[in-house]
Length: 209
Image (cartoon, rainbow, N blue to C red; front, side, top):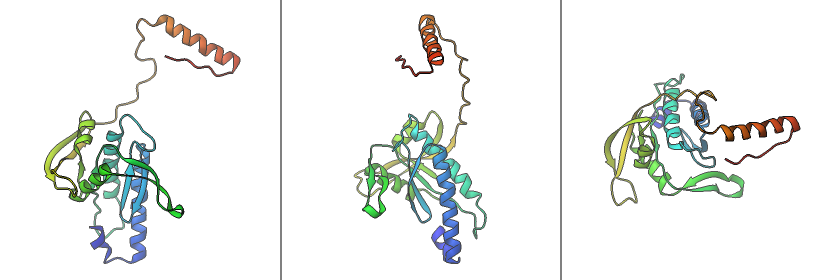
């Protein structure tokens, strides 16, 4: 509803509000290890897994979406409460610097990103829609319910969709040393000797496990 809301606002106020929202969303993307590849008015495109990859990028994307939704809902100064709708999809993409020399940006393209855009368009206000691969990759931490499949341009079959309902709390970091090593006394002693030499000689060493 941002476009219709903007019709009754001063253009400078619209620009300031959109810029503020984009900054808040980008902050959450970065907090969860993602990269904002583009800002399009009242929307952003974010990448998780490129150019920096983590083993839990799909989960990071969902957590970022939840955090963004909360931040946007709390924004003040708009004529009415703002709501976010999000589409998340997981898969292979073609990623890299694209565009003319004067405006080259790191972005991703292909079926995965196109489907994410379709999921976003289909999601009602306040909803986070995820694709099948995202659902499979995050079901240990994310509670999602199946909703009606959507018809996407270029797809022969309707696209399965899940709506995110909640995400488990992030596990507290386990202090180093709380899990004992079993049957590795000799190996641990060897590592400790290497570390002692590093400290004594003030030179780096490489240990291959």
